[in-house]
Length: 76
Image (cartoon, rainbow, N blue to C red; front, side):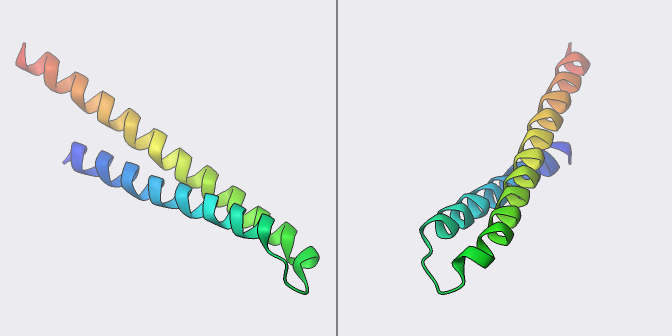
């Protein structure tokens, strides 16, 4: 159960981080009519998405490491 949860957190976190990076690229290279008005909002959303995705990836990694350590000590 724990490894499935850790893998899920890392997977969803990776997707969110990639989505945030895509928003950064679109925000930087966008040349629409109102791009100066929308740029702060797009960068805020991109930053939040990257931070949340990164936090989920770290949480999944740590959960995987904790789960692995408890299984190794139980087997010994």
